[in-house]
Image (tube, rainbow, N blue to C red; front, side, top):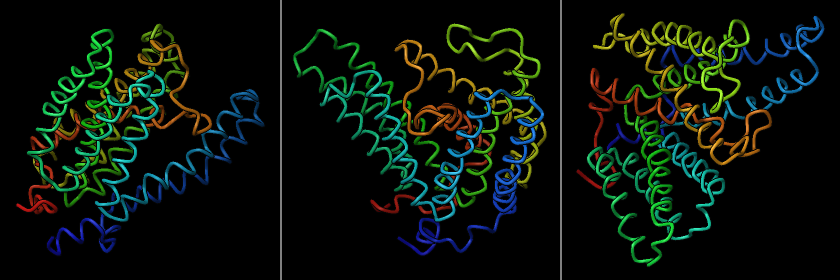
Length: 334
């Protein structure tokens, strides 16, 4: 491992070099200071009922924990970022396995977990060839190994649940971690995660303001068409505006490409949320977990990144590339 790779993986020397990172941290800090004042003002004005007020405070306290958990690994370096995403992948899979009952299938569950770990290794190694190959190879391994259980009843269900899990928590979240192999991973990740999380807030505010028609009432009863369109407009504006500074002097830094990138973030973020809502409705459960008051579990909080991460990764990769100037196969040897 050369000095360049070591500095990217473990160094904090350049953590605050990007203006996007510094402004993002300042904006988050100010939001934490202003939010309680805003809640109190709304409550005194009688704009929010007791139950909604309590829910807002629960979410606020949860964000006080969630934001440092997301920001600190990115600031510490690429190694910690990738390990944090890998840990998140396992935790999300754990919730999914418990909700679907897949955890009872020990061999199947073990194969999925090992697949997620293998993908995490390929990300940490910056070995894109292995990263791309692991999904079809590991899916084939799952299909083949489960044959030897000699249990044809339920075989399709077990395999399908396992491969969906490998897709969502190994491959999709793996793309989020792979951004850390880029020299500018900090501003990219701060920009992406903030846009995706605000996309949810924009949808909520827009829906409450002018949402009338339900979007998909059987899948997510509280989501409205107005909320979805409002989020699409607001998130696209935010992502394109900040994206100009994140991707300055690159082929992406053109109005049409930045706007399309913003649309991709908003649309894929909403679809990720609806994807998990579909799973929860099918299982007849409200949340995938209860870890974070007001948010649910890990998967409830980070579902919007499931489809947004690979969509943005490949869009950015097509025009600009990801980590092309960084050493590859830093652990296994090139």
